[in-house]
Image (cartoon, rainbow, N blue to C red; front, side, top):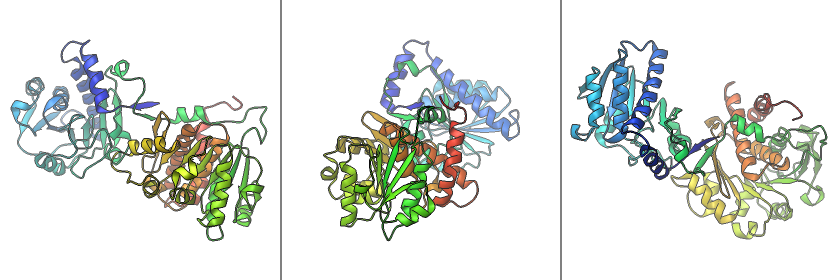
Length: 479
């Protein structure tokens, strides 16, 4: 599990660590990691010796890291130019002296380069770049390696003004920052590499945001035990579909069957369509006739008429975990507390931004993590806020999914996700883990599908089982 912290928490940890170290050690650790990664990029592009690097240098420690890294590169035979974007008397003096001593030189305009180091502003900078810095960023014609964060992004929220840099690679120090993993800024960070500078022991025990990896998700994923049968593996009920929308339940049932649950019950008005696609499912017309389930999904293609509302009431009356998606969210948005206030079992809601706005009564805004967490606290539910970097927030838990892809922005993709999520709930996963695990594997399936061409929800569904297989392959069967 990778962890992300906000600026105030990082600053406090840095101060505590620096109090235990000689002056300048922390900056030298950062510069060494930065120079190593820059040299690796140059080597991949044709070689380190004789290559050209341009430093974009701002005031403060971020500029100091960049200058010291430039000095290390210059000593390896790299031709290093530095463009100062703050007055020289505000530029890190020791870093500047080190660069000059190593043979680096100052320039007054952007010069041709094989690699550009963006050391304009770090975690203390305000969102957006000043005109001169922005002009320099836009004038470069080489890959950008961002120092700690891409300059100009909002580090705590992940907002990315147009007046900010976009990097091919970001080398960040000590810990991840929210902007590198959540919100639009994450797309500007490129490949993120974390350099350990010894900050870990000084950071709070509870991070602002957790980023699971494949090993985390695989360790959570319910797998059949020798003594299991179809009931003990979990029974998931799916209330979805209407005469107008018959495809959504087919996709949701398919998503559920790709998950760990051993039994899928479908209740809805698209029974014949589901039966033709998935003979494994047990099918009824109404929730009240479906029988017991360990978890329910409600909403995909359900409609919003009185029959749909009655079916939703039946689902929410069950004292089991429930995942609400699509039309169920439209219904709930009319009176969120009225619909959800009586619930004692876990509830997961899966809004995209417009559904969030209808439920919350306000736009998501720049800080997607805070928005999801505040709605979770207000309604007592787990929120899966969909997006390129899907955020999951539950009581005391905040996750972001690292596997998202724009290819998943296609009709029906969310129906597949809801089915998989419900299957994980039925399999016994706690709601926040079920939500982030479903998003993680859904993202893997989207990437797999995109590798073969344009993506539809059917392609995502087809890729779901191979994605689960590959995720669990290292784990011995019957653990």
